[in-house]
Length: 79
Image (cartoon, rainbow, N blue to C red; front, side):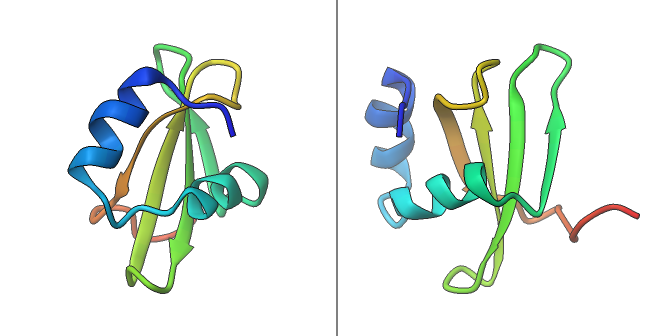
């Protein structure tokens, strides 16, 4: 999995409970995906261990993980 320096130095430090395999799964099998106005891509998956959806943000390439966090406002796949 490719990551940004920000992800390695800031995100994982602030959220040590995050698992890389969750991020990898979000990229492979997202429950939902959308493109932000700046071109970055948001991927969501439900993580039972967290009891919440995890939002994983990649750069425009869709592969390089830049940020990840439990998204308390995401209620599931929009209809």
